[in-house]
Length: 639
Image (tube, rainbow, N blue to C red; front, side, top):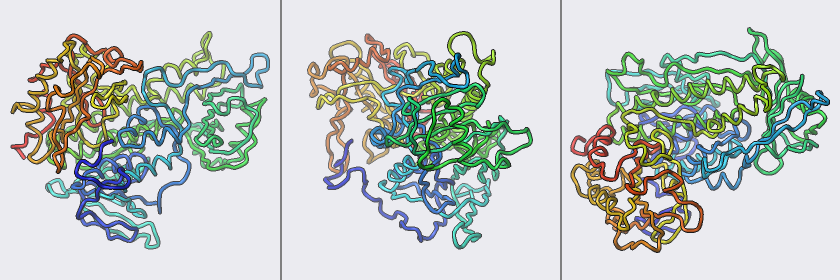
């Protein structure tokens, strides 16, 4: 973490200097007349987007929520490894690691062949594959995740806070207007319930759930089906003789249905997903009048011969599995995409719903807005053309479809009676096989964006075989040369809207190709660093370049490093000493070997602000790098 760039300031370094002219804080503050971005909903999708945009004090962001304040319990609890990597960029990954439950093993239980009315453990599987991520799979109360995002917002230069007790009632887009063309009608949900107010916005993002008003206002619809199966979920404090109560468990009984056990943070809390009643095709789960006692009773029937003695029900809910996907994630129909750009977007449950048992709801929702946030910032700061915003729906709809299809199969496997030949082949039970097959998916690591203006072709993929273009940048251990600090290379990236260019040196002791690249990036008019950095900005304000060498730190002469990697920055003109890295010398692993980096030729890896790999190029691929960024940014001269 770097601070003091613009002068010494005592106190918590996470609290940024407040920007002048920001909107006042407090519950009774007046609503603004205009904003750049209005976000509907303080769920994980909305807060992830707000936390990103809050870092830009020149972008006026507003987030509204009909509830009176943050949630305190319930909702989702699974944080996959990809989301943990994202949390690291926001600065609270280590906090989640310290507070959360780590899912290390998953146990599988089936009917005991000698006594089918009782269950028996039939196997265990490692929950996160070795070297799939440097971060763990964790379980934590969604309310705490919200609190961490809210803290990022409050500590930002914008001092952004939600406007509680306001909901989007309707919106209208003036397609002839360029300035704040979306008129949003907000309705008060407090003591002045029914009172309305109007805010005009440049962009609106609906993170307002499956019954999304924003989605309905732009004509979006959720399409799909329901499994007609009632499930109960409860967070409880309990005692039990079930031996694996502090491990994640997938349990299938002979006749009483299925159960998922998810230990939670704090050592005592646990969550259970419990299969309940089959519903008729035209029946809704609410008509059954099921209660928490029904969930507890079903859990005890499934767990036989073990029992669970519930001391406190912290939170519970009954739900019906549904798999639905919106036809589009923005306001522009496909046939109009060439003639106009989006102004209104949907994210999270507003555009895709599914079962909670694969633990993807909160994760995919945050993935939506982590994809969208930097694109909105690029356009609002006039770094990129508004056509860039078409890429949000194009990229995230495909991933949502993958989620729906995979979760549909997983829900079917989990709800199937034991012994069905289609699901229970010889040897390992099908639900255990399915779990193993889905590890990459459940870790959030299967996202793979197709070639586009933001994702280059695989022409030079062989230069970094372990860093796949279109997938997230896979971190690995390195040592920072200036101070011999062991760290993860991916952790230099923050959720600040900047691109990263990781230049891996060739085998030559001098790293000559890397030096020539650095000189070109720093001085050539065709360089994207030169071309897209504005007057008065630091040279890493848009593209943050880092160099990684094959030698150990004691074999490198820091004084001979190119000046691009030792830039002078900030109001005081201080030198940045944290841009040069080398291989780890204490056995953590060699990043060149671990990620398949070509040692003879080296390479550069271009990484988007959302941590996905945009391109792999040779160190002398100057023209290809320049052409790629021409499709992303507007030249400074055109602004």
